[in-house]
Length: 115
Image (cartoon, rainbow, N blue to C red; front, top):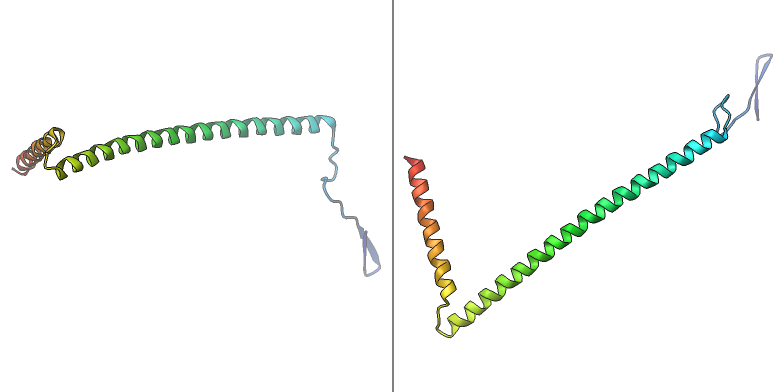
């Protein structure tokens, strides 16, 4: 409790912490607060579940991509071994021919668009 003397008049102020003046806490307020807290916790758990599902899907997609890249690496490694032995793999020839065809198509499209 504090008191100040201003002139002849004395004022007293009491510092209240926590509650607002004139407001009484009741069981209803506490129940409502508890229910809001429970609802908030449910929503938080739901958001967390969705976030983990998303991350699980992301990991699965990345794992599939890694497997695909490993297969591709193995294919190219086998081609390199065959080339070292003096053999040209059939699949490598097909890939080269396909790339040549795509390049010709791009040149034709570019030439057509240019005119």
